[in-house]
Image (cartoon, rainbow, N blue to C red; front, top):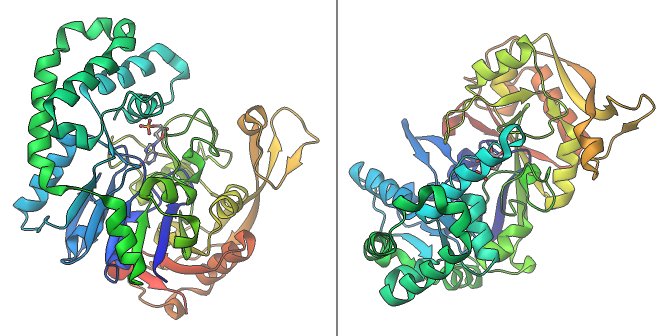
Length: 425
Ligand code: IMP
């Protein structure tokens, strides 16, 4: 299947990196199609731990072309340090390509993200403060700076001047930190450093697809953080759903053969916004500690809860998922019973009940999870290497998820290592 999209089926942090790392072994090209360094994933590859924010984890396979697609918003300082970190550990990064059309995070975007959150006060979004919203706003307002602009001083200066003009008021507190000449020079330096990687990303993808080679489209964040279909305004500023792969990589829907959704065996969320199956008790804390649920990018403790199949079914339909990978199943070991959220009732209306994901924000904000209980298992499953070795209750849990979501579960993760991802028979 040449074109496979991998997306998060929850609120991000599902462990997509591990699944991509596994599939990248057989891929010719891996292309990130949205988000920026608000994303972060940790993978354990050949016994070593790697953290990525912008570069697709396929970079660890010599010969795999890794593209930062046009849909990604790039902070060049972060990218340069990620490249340096990989080089220092002996990784060849010559196969890294950055779409010339990818937008760039500028210093004033970082200032505006912080300023915007401070202005919202207690209503803040809880962004990663990596400037995704201000940079994406400039893209839509046609005031963005693209990677190709970093290669031309005259164009870059003109575009920065135009971008700064409507922001005068918001940037007044930062006035002394904004020096047009200094920013231009700093970003030209990034341009020179990254020039060898700047390329026509879509041509590379088309070339591979036309030769029937395997291309992975790597999503960041998750369906419920989608700017159009997620829990707006508590979302990111891009389309993490499979449809985003078309615009963010420059392909058509017919170039996509499979869509894999990744979900944890439970649920987490970072930042503000509705989360109907959230746990505020000791069980939630136990999941947080056992699952190491602290952000890769910001270190923030993640909110935790039981698996929500109402939300998962929504994600499955939005993405037209063809397969589901369930990660962190080992974290559920030791619970006598495991709950699954199968419907929402309302904190405000005792007659209300739904099994479909509510489109209305007020309904969603007052949604309360209703649960089914499944038997747990006590065994440590981190050493399990095949489906048959899983305790019966764990297999039943996966079968339940498959049935409830209506998408085949093809993989399950029982620990951070790549050998700890087991395939369904
Ligand atoms: P932003 O993308 O930094 O603007 O943040 C918007 C919302 O998306 C916040 O709730 C963030 O916590 C959330 N978010 C952004 N990136 C990730 C991610 O990679 N994992 C989980 N949540 C994320």
